[in-house]
Length: 95
Image (cartoon, rainbow, N blue to C red):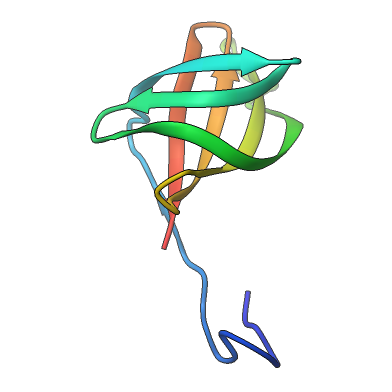
């Protein structure tokens, strides 16, 4: 995404996918992520959007379904969290 005008004009936001995504511990408040702890990242979540239901590989013997949130941690880190049937994980970091 490229900002066109105002502060940060010309800035580019990129995403670094984590492969494999590390597990995360997420505390909820009113059903929304409120605190995050994952490898090298920990803090209070100050803003967020989601969840979005994501699914895929429905044509295989091992389809997946997960809910994803984009969140901002209190240190300014932007990331994507996912809740799967196995728990929470850190899907990506936005740079």
